Image 1 (cartoon, rainbow, N blue to C red):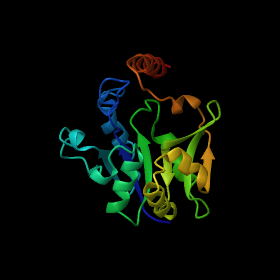
Image 2: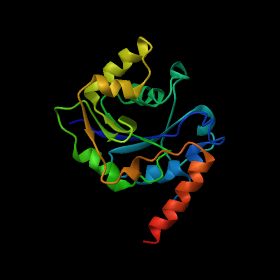
Image 3: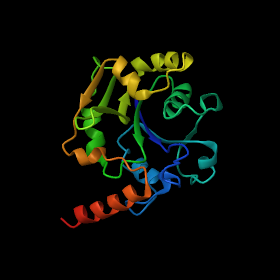
Image 4: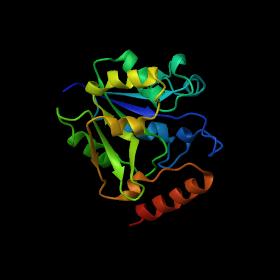
Length: 198
């Protein structure tokens, strides 16, 4: 099985939030650094970001900047840019908008890796959605992502439906909570404080 690289997807414009979601703090540090820190069980870890974000990232972090040819295609840009640099690797993608994700949640994805699957992702039975930014993309499927890009199919969620993907449900559905607005951010902070007091 190929080496697994962690890829923290810092995201794009964050237009609904009004600020860069990757720098919001849920755990006393910018979320992009928190996610990076809990991926230390991967063979290597990178922050995936755009050119503007890269300028603000501390030099101690490994960075992969989105290639200009993949601009404006969403999270697929992160995966394609990483694959172009490390074509032999598999990638664990984690978005910065999941405040309740911890190392236990991410390790469960790794525990489900096998030579028979192209991808492993979390699945939310309430929304009936795959979570493409809580997923492992095995090296075996990455050439097909390139083909999808060439024909204009940029959705990673649709891609996960088209390959042999193992879908797993988390122990706590709260882990899949995505934060996209200031109101959601404030709610998440309250919930995290409640959880820490238990």
